[in-house]
Length: 284
Picture 1 (cartoon, rainbow, N blue to C red):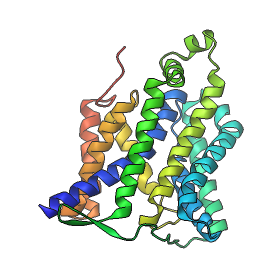
Picture 2: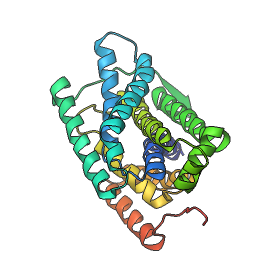
Picture 3: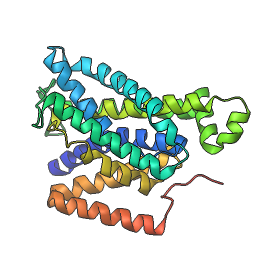
Picture 4: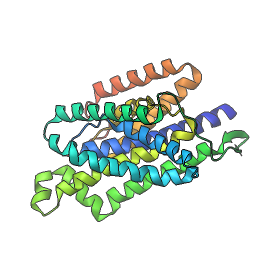
């Protein structure tokens, strides 16, 4: 029973963190048709924002504010300088964002070095849940990820801004003819997706090895979650994250991390073969 409770908590923690990264990816792809290969590096920059804040002798909680703001600014700059020029060339967006990811990674190495960085756990005391001793910071991760995810869904499905964004996703030309500034929406959507990845990196930094290669660890499962759940609906991402996150966590706890990766890829292959557009698609 204790093992099952601990496994359930670990699954929930990983899935909610993965949801933050995946939401940013699917929002950018759904609105702008851009596959952002640099999204893992946005997660990386969020984690290194915590390192920078720590070096300035500021509390960890300040990084949770600094990271999303800093990544939103990075997203705005990159969208203005590079991304907006390749919107209508799908393959070029992959190459451009892949090049951005390489540059960002090398800048991190130049600025912080190639070795891993450690972050002080701001909540070191564990808590007792139904007889299971569990790290309190992981509970904070779950709460923060859930709060940000709910806020994101509220914006998209309960606000006028979300209605406008969904209108652009459904029919960009029609939305523009009705007076919506699609260019401005593209700019701020890319910044918002980058901010989500930056916040996820900052939240996860204290329980991970912060190094220049850490971005790929979340980018690949995030892409798989989107492909499994479907790129045309935010709720599809929730389903995809649940399947990928639970499969990865359960298999790795029972076997090895390699076995978990194999199981995740096999699951994704089967689902994509049977449902090429994902499990949840937009009604036409």
